[in-house]
Length: 267
Image 1 (tube, rainbow, N blue to C red):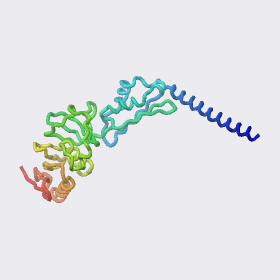
Image 2 (image 1 turned 90 degrees about the horizontal axis):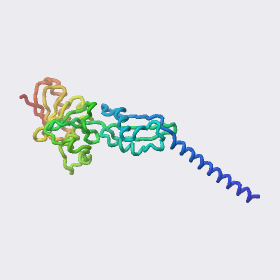
Image 3 (image 1 turned 60 degrees about the horizontal axis):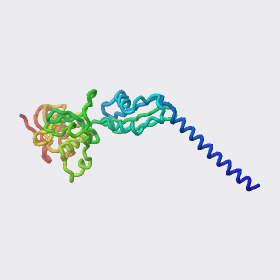
């Protein structure tokens, strides 16, 4: 009797597991054949202006994957869609997944432009927060700090170039002009006072930086992108204790290149 009960118990468990497997199989088949009823596109722009829209994504999807609505979910290659979308220069991250109601979800994180660079041939491109070159959008413009002057770098010659971020903080790496522009742009954008005051970065013949402020009829000679905290602290103190008292149009040039000095002059 005990042996019979034991066999019966084992048989029941086997049947339960087999039934569960069959049920899972049916669910998988049903999901595989379930038609795509809806496509949900979500774009996270962060704190920047939009450079890509849902309409742009719809066009990319049509070119890379064809018409998705109505197609069985099992025939939709989410990995291939992710790969195609990652090739779009304004997309930083993308995730494509589905649910059991027939919806396909596409979550996108847009890159965030840091600088708009206009090189000496008047070619324009962006440098984003991660140090990646981006083309200028034909539809939208990001309101960011502008850098121009004696800049050789070009997006057309080196598309999707990305700065080695180790070179930003480690002095053993060679600091290229683009790396220094990135360091300077990052410093200005993360400082509320500087972000509200500095309108433009100009690169002169010596590849030193001159800053054009929004308020005041003067140019700030910064020099190289070194000792930025010290240099901008001097500028802040001079603005607060100097120009606030004598007037913002008193001088044409404010030189903060040298250590422990602020040298002002009129032209």
